[in-house]
Image 1: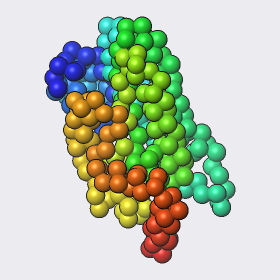
Image 2 (image 1 turned 90 degrees about the vertical axis):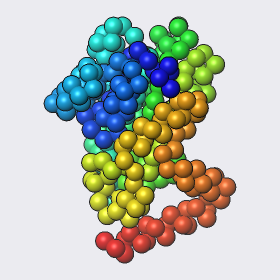
Image 3 (image 1 turned 60 degrees about the vertical axis):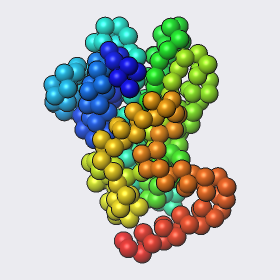
Length: 257
C-alpha cells in the first residue's frame, strides 16, 4: 500500500476532525504529503501539526489552488470529505431554502468545483485520484434528513460520472459510503441517528482502513459497513418492498419522538 501514496500530494477537506482527520492521519502514515483543510483554522492546524502536514484552512470549494501551491504544484489525491448534515426539509413543512442551498453547495458543488480545477492536469498527465466521502444515504436514504439524503445522492452520482467518464484516462475514483460513524455529525443527527445509525456505528479510523483496502483492490465503491451492499441490492431488486421497510422505520421513529 505504501507505494500507492508514498510521496503523493494529498488534500483532505473537512479534516479538522472525524473522518477527514482519520484520512489525513492515514495518508501521512503511508508517506504522503498532506494538506489539511477545514473551515476551522485552529482545528486544521492542530491536525496538520500532529501529522507533519500543511494547514490550508478555508472554504473547501475554493482552496484547490492554494493547496496545489502548498504541495509544490501538484495534487495527486483529492479527498472531497467536507460535508454538512441538516435534518428536516420534509415536503409537508415550510422549506428552509438556505439549508438546501448550503447542502447542495458543500455536499455536491464543492466536489464539482474541485474536479473542474484538478481534471485538466490529471488528464494531461494520465493519473489522479478523487476520493468522495459520500454516505450510505447516497446509496439508500436517511429518515428525517431530506437535504442530506438528496445531496448525498448527488455526490454519489457525480463520483460515478467521474469514474465512468475518465477511468480510461487514468483517473481513479473512490466513493466512501459508510453508515454511522462516531463523529460530531452523528451526534447531531438526534433521535433518527440514535435509531438507525448508532447501533452499528464504527470509528473514523475504520473508514480510513476501508478506503485503503479499496485503493489496494482498485475498487470504486467503499463500504465500511459491508451489510450496506445487501441493502443496496434489495433496494434495486424490489424498490416497493424496500420503501415499505424504510417506511416502517419512519413510523417507529415518529412513535418514539
